[in-house]
Image (cartoon, rainbow, N blue to C red):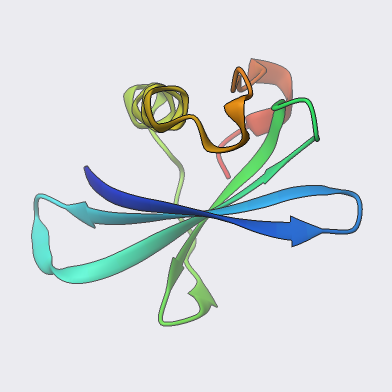
Length: 91
């Protein structure tokens, strides 16, 4: 998975973050990971989107870790981003 941008979108009950990604096996397809998080940076869900539609996709543990590393490295809103195992699940 290759990540190339992140955008924070305000939400009423927390944060909504859009993360642009490409997958190695589909280099010409552009996806967005819709991340829902608390204002403290606790990630509650991840959902893969394609052309505005949700995909049925279970993120691999290494993909979740990669997303967290990216968010922490680019640090939108200067928060320490985490994904609690019990909350993020496969979405």
